Length: 352
Image 1 (cartoon, one colour):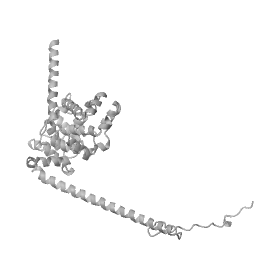
Image 2: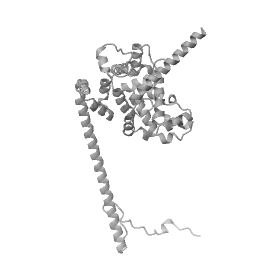
Image 3: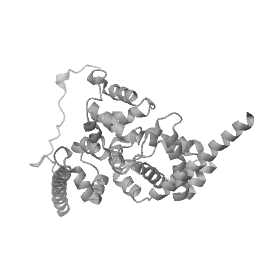
Image 4: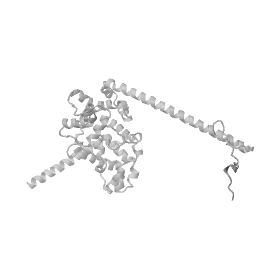
């Protein structure tokens, strides 16, 4: 068969480009029928509607951003007025309007003022002023965490250094200098404002044992069905809650939630740890009561993200009343320990 040259082929018909309108959209083919005209007009109408919706959403977003910025600036101004220059008005304001301070702390301290306010509500600022020159640096700036922990271990040799203390110091150093962080740790562990916390880190962790005893009873009283399930699956608070108390939720909780908890913790004391723990269990109650041992342990150490929303979790925690019951359980724990000590001493004398 004779070969034909490429040039001998005639090009086929080239499809005409489809017409577009001034916006770049492909025009509908005109069929000449009324249906085609209506379809074309509807397409343009739908496009106009989508653009209008987009512009409205953009306006609403920008408006919401402006409102949030305005609210935050107003909130910061209120806090600055409340604390005064360098904290000069703080004590006066707390004495005069304690409920206002409590409400504002629970809503969250402005991040730009958090370091200063933490020092004021913990009493550490007073300790620093009364003990000039006590804190000494032990290395270059990049070793700030080591410096603070080393300084505390020298300051309080009975406690020294325990691993959980690093989480506390690390969080404090995000908002203040080494010296300020050191004195805030002293205020917490020695009890400048609230009950001393040093028992969390002493040999045998005596305060941790007390807190776990109290929390176990609170779970059974506030969440009886879950408490019964824990008993059935042989779950006790030491398996999941020890780190809550030792690090005040700074170990594994989301940072934004940990900060809000610390705001309240420094102002109101350790009871917020119990409240948040109970609120978490209450929030996840219906899921937890269905889980067997292995999955239950995992769930108690890995709460879902939606359970960690401070605007949902903290109001739930604030609604739980524990102060009076904590005091009663503390006395019960102390009596129980006294009996145990007496029993051990009595057995020791008999063996002699």
